[in-house]
Image 1 (cartoon, rainbow, N blue to C red):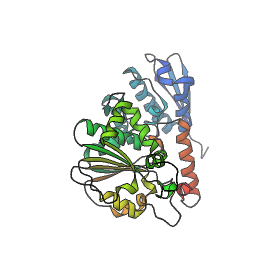
Image 2: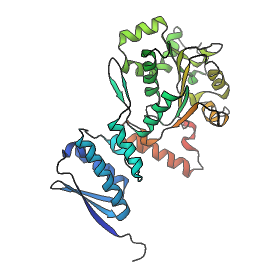
Image 3: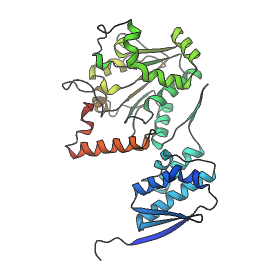
Length: 332
């Protein structure tokens, strides 16, 4: 009998809960729980039977009770909601996940209201509200750029800043854009498109066009920041893993009075030449211990795209660790 784990079964009552709101389409939420824990879930007559080893059954039962409580309060669960509770054994952490829905962090704009969807995103927005310089490091799909743009527009609307600058390194063109056809706007727009996309999701086209014409919003390649002093501005440096150490220093020393800066990037997707160190990687050690700035680390649990994106990121991370820790192989 040694080596065998004692199985147990526990029942979670959900008679007063709409099954579709709790389970998701084609029971996707239940299947996600089953993929994450060594348990089997069976629904019958308003009860979910949880079968597996004792520790997993206890944790999954607590998760299902928490999710059922959310549905009772009017939530229709999606997979990212379920992910907020998976892997959380501490009841206090589970309570923190519940607070995402009871006291959500919101940005309200012309076109939509934005609510953070994960604990990592909640910590990110809290850092944006507290600190003048925030570094957000994490994989694609975690809302690094989108939430930074939302915070910038919110700061502009509430008159905390007078303008917004959205900045990206044009690495693929080596910051030397002269050989590309067209005027400068046509040369750099392909590199800055994700920033425009975030703006378009928040503000009307007419307002964006007016702000761009007035210089209230400026979208520019990183090379254009040299020699400038940015006062009363909310500045976002996106794709910062593709800055050199010198470029990172140049950018950070542009900040003037009343300025806020958010630096976002994914250190597993570095497109610099092999001999160049990433400014986003190096800055973590350089600024270690500097007060009044924040480093926020997001991970696959914070991905709010298709559920397979989480699995892809996890698979790459595991592959990197198995091959000497070359996490993401610099994106090359």
